[in-house]
Each structure stands twice: as structure tokens, then as C-alpha cells.
Amino acid sequence: MQRRTCHFTGDVQGVGFRYTAHHLAMQYDVRGYVRNLPDGRVEVVTEGPDDQMDKLLAGLQERMGAYIRDTEVRASPATGEFSGFSIRH
Image (cartoon, rainbow, N blue to C red; front, side, top):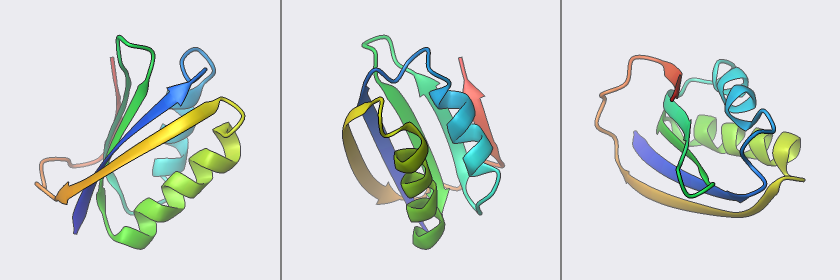
């Protein structure tokens, strides 16, 4: 398993991005969180099988693509620290 830290830039805060990410994540075998960052980006951290994380990111692009200007994805080893997927405040 792998961990992906994704940063989305654009008009991604205040448009339901976190709730959409949470709803989508519940449909896949992923764990982690989504949160707004002070600089206006949204961070999504996931751990799970590659295909499940790919589907989550594709779903976010499909549903929220009009608000996303850029996406940065960094992969690292999974830590196993998450028991589910949450919205962090």
C-alpha cells in the first residue's frame, strides 16, 4: 500500500470540495482525510490500494474539475495510521 498527499489549487474552498471528497472516499477502499489549508488549497491524504486511490482522484476531477486549477500529488509509504476517512477542520 501507498500513501498519497494531494494538494488542489484553484477555487477549491467554499464549494463543497471537502464534502465531495468525503462522500467519494466512502465508496472506495481508502483511508485518510481532507482539509482546507490556510493558503487556499485543499489537502487530501489517502492510503490504500493504488487503483482505489486512482478512482477517488478521478472522481474528484470529474465532479470538482471546474474549480481545480492544479493538482500536486506526492507518493510515500503508507503509515497505517488511519482507520477511516475524515474531514479535518
